[in-house]
Every structure is written in structure tokens, then in C-alpha cells.
Length: 242
Image 1 (tube, rainbow, N blue to C red):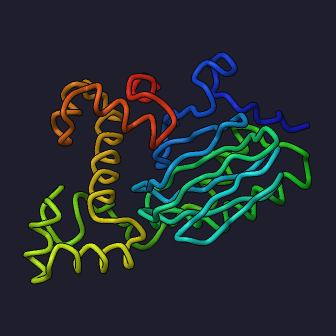
Image 2: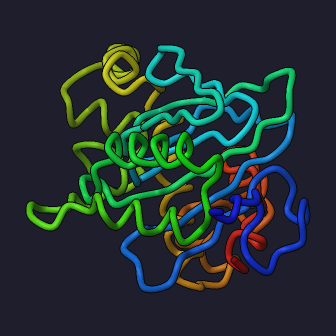
Image 3: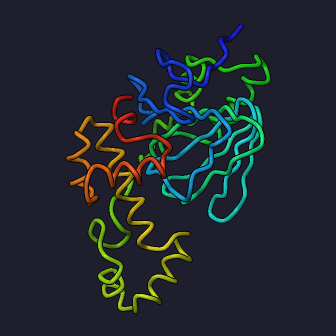
């Protein structure tokens, strides 16, 4: 019988880090894995530099992705392409699910979900070893893995809205309207989310939190902490430690 997937990383006490927990698997091109467990699983609009695969073990995950609703129940999954703004919604029942963050274009995300669903139906569970094997079975061997863009589209990292508008030859208001239609969030929000994803990358590399805050344009460590937890559900310290 396959070991059922428990919603906490190996060697971590259940519920220690709240609804969200993240960690990096060794010897894998998967950027990171995550677990979500609880009732209070709503997050505001954010995005990831990676393709996100969410697979539900119990309860229901509910998303708004690019303005469209996407729900998944037990044995089902959702793919959120890299840099796609989305938000998650709370539900009336506790949810337990796993998240995989994959290099953009590096894995067949839809195929990973389909294989996990077949395994779930056949065995009634998913073990950590099963999860990794299934993902690696659908890694794209050929083709180019896309490097996630950094900074604001079409400009230098974290330009001001006024500067981006001038570069585009538009008024601030006109540029903001066009940008929001194209990307799903206003330019200042997109810039903030880009900075948070860069902070996430630096924290994964083990950089000190105060240095990460300075390097990504936050006022101080506390400012980064507030924004980071609101977007990703954990503090920078807990995220870095994993």
C-alpha cells in the first residue's frame, strides 16, 4: 500500500508553520514543494516565477486565475502558468493539498496532474516518493526551459510607473489601464509581486533577510516580512529556514 501523503514536509511537526509550508527537494529540478492545510487558505492576488501545480488530497481548492474561477476537489489539480496573477479563496471545509513549483516549461504540468490523479484513483493516496517519480517522468528533456523574467516587463527592474509610461510614450493613466488589461494587475502591484518573487529566489539561496530586503527595494526587513507573508502565507524567516 502506498504511503499516504501527509500535509507536512518530512521531519516537520504538523501545523508548525501554519497553513503553508515550503521546502526544496534535493537532487531535483523542481524549484520547491509546498503543502497547504486548513480553513484559512485565502491569499490575495499574487504570482510565482514558476509554473504552479496544485493537487488536492481533501477538501477543495478554489482559485481566481486571470479573472476566471478554477476549483479542484480530491484527486484533482490545477495548473497556474508562471507569472499569471491569481488569488486563492477560503472554503467551508478544511483543505489539504500539495503545491509543486516547476521551472517554466520544464515539466508537462497538465500531464503531471493527470498521472497523479491516476495514481490517486488506483492507490487512494500519494507518497512523497511517488510524487517525485511522477514529476520526473514528465520532465521535458528537450526544449528550452524559460528563465523567469525579472523586474517590470519592457524595462529595468522595478521602474516607477511614471518612467514606464514615459518609455511607452503614454500618460500614466493610459499606461496603467493598458497594463492592467494585459497583465491582470496594475503596474505598481505587478512590480511589488516581481520584487517579492526575487526575494523568494534570494531567500532560497540562503541570503540574509535584511540584505534581501535592501536588494529588492523594501524599506526594511519588517516591510518585506509584511508583504511576503501576505502574498505567500509564511514569513521570510520560516521560508528561508526550509
